[in-house]
Amino acid sequence: MDYKYLSKDEGIYKAIKAEEKRQSEGMELIASENYASPVVLEAMGCVLNNKYSEGYPGHRYYGGQEFVDDVENLAIKRAKKLFNAEHVNIQPLSGSPANAAVYMAFLKPGDKVLGLKLDHGGHLSHGHPVNFSGMLYNFVQYGVDAETGYVDMDEVAEIARQEKPKMIVAGYSAYSREIEWEKFKQIADEVGAFTFADIAHTAGLIAAGLLNNPVPFFDVVSTTTHKTLRGPRGAIIMCLEKYAPQVDRAVFPGMQGGPHDHINAAKAVALGEALKPEFKVYARQIITNAKVMAEELANKDYKIISGGTDNHLLVIDMTNKGVAGKETEILLDKVGISVSRSTIPNDPNPPMNPSGVRLGTPAITTRGMREKDVIKIVSLFDKTIISKNKAAELNKIKKEVKEFCLRFPVPGI
Ligand SMILES: *Cc1c(COP(=O)(O)O)cnc(C)c1O
Image 1 (cartoon, helix red, strand yellow):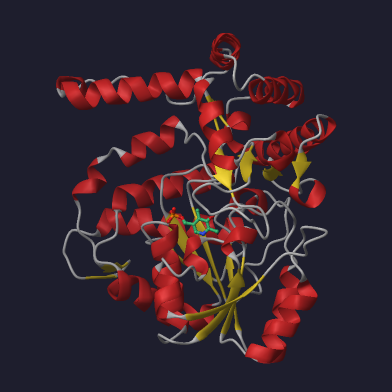
Image 2: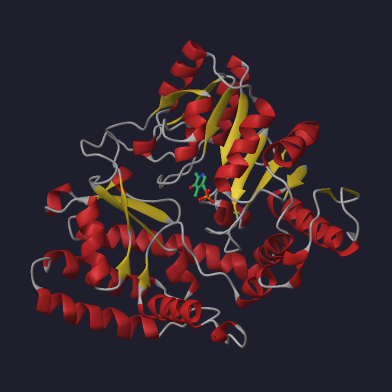
């Protein structure tokens, strides 16, 4: 990007230019990351940042809202259409605050909630003891089947009947399989629990119609807007119309003050982009790339949790390769490949140094990489692991990664 004004702030300008170079020359395989379009970036840098607009369209606590209302209404309209939602709140600042608002809307502190274990692919905000969710609510947890790596729906039903939670949470951060929303709904109905889907990771794939959509029949659904949805950092909450007042009240004034109107404009832009036919093509390629990545890795004797993927990500157990998750992450960083360490189900190692890594294809797909490029990426990945103690070899791979990546421009750079 061309930073006409920012270039005068030398310190920040230098860091941003260096980050641009890093993003251009590096291979982004972190499953939660993506490159927003220049249109999204432009909206994020606009004068809407200057506005205070506590409240909702038509009901604000400040004057001068006519254009902010247009922005928010448009974002809501696009999200409703994209996800087939009855009600949308566009204001949550990010995924974790959105989830805090969801719990606040449906629960009281101390209420029982059923969520997936963190080391099985769940999120911090689904009841981890170090997170507000685990501190305020009484989470009980289900897991994935140790053999198959799939969520064990029989176990979910069993725990739900035993524990009678007030809410059941599904939707994960490191789970590569389709989620059985309908079964979750049946179980929740049987025990009288609210259904909450957190589709932070897969929203773009759901929006494209490639994964099942819980929005029309779950009580409440949250999603980030910056992962597969490729928008600004932020989140939205969708719910059935009957819960609209309590959800809106929980977001504002419950959790937040003034909304970030510039970010909400960027959310509207991203939602508009996701409604275009090209987005479906993009989302389909994300999944194709992930499947090819899983197959190629399996061919090289990497152990993929659940044996493959239905979505944009996969988790590898690195144990048989003689490197743990953190070591793999650091090693790959040396050659310009970004991945994130990840726990594996029932991980014997601690979360700071777990046994696996998580890879995802949303970012490389945005740059235009396809099946044959994924094959190349896996060969670079594997060469790096094999060359772990060979500095000269790692240097050579780093050059190769850079040359390869520079063939695929990053949007906005
Ligand atoms: C990423 C993620 C979030 C949190 O998003 P932040 O914007 O980082 O707070 C919440 N839930 C799930 C399942 C996620 O993967």
